[in-house]
Image 1 (cartoon, one colour):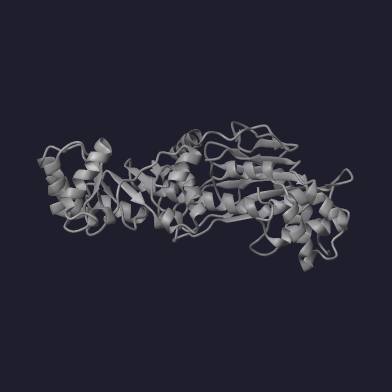
Image 2: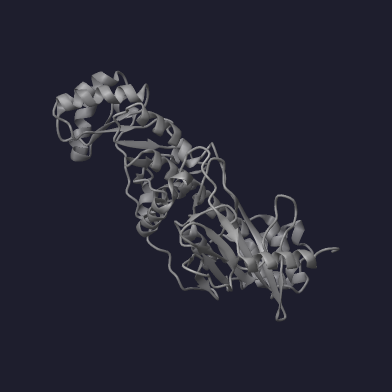
Length: 440
């Protein structure tokens, strides 16, 4: 794992911690959803598997250390810092909610407790992988909800921020409820179903549309999906009808999708292809999917790309990684920020989930009444104690979580705010820390 895949200031702080003799202090950081994005009633936590892989494999090689030595920021760094880099491994603890957990504003996704440089260094990568995958999984869940039981396939790699982002997006979209992905590497790496047949260039490369369809049918047989809007959509549907079975379906990528799907359905049904699916693609999102179905579109599945992997209506997750406590020489000191609009809570946390609300409490508290504690140990003293679940189990867990969430929080616009409270003990701790910092 490339240890330099981080912001420079994580490393300069590391050198500073060594210079100040603080490298053995144990710090606790929370990665928290500060607030939900616009029109989001919840977030689907994703990215834990990559966080675990990162922490367990984080090392500095000789070339990386020599590069850091060459930078002006480290010209006065103590030699002990570079020794620390050569011997570096994550020796701390990771606590997290299970991947696929539905969370709300103010709730921690994970907690890192480790020697301060180890915990500090992880900030950039953890924010990136948790923030991006959570954004995608949440967006996917909204599209799947809008599709009302119809399949949604992720098609977004070519529009993602980078090729590797497309691989991760396929994974996160599957957690959020998508049936599968068009990204072949995502399929191989994570065991996700993959989908895809042919593009408009396939049709254009043949002298006739009918010939392109016949060859595709010969190749794919029962898995054939014809792209029928290259020239004349309805005429192409008639060609598909004349070819008959085997055929899985047709894809509409442009035009008035509601009206075209209705007419194509009539053509296919008249030819006895009643089980031939109609897929709609083309700049779709949850709003357009809901509108199409409200207009009577005869669509069996949707392919979504740009709006899923970029989430343009909410292009980012407000996740933060903040110091909550620090322990030195047997003494624990709780920490918090009190700046306007960016306050944080002190101490390690636990989320207690009741039937009708969540309560954020201190990590040492026990819940009152019938509540589930969501945050679990994953890594202890640098050793994995809770291996990540298979992607299928994560997806199933997320689907169960979303199904239990009342309708008011699923609205694609202006959803209700889920009740999240602070425990009395956490409120008292916050007040105590605030009073202790007055005048500093």
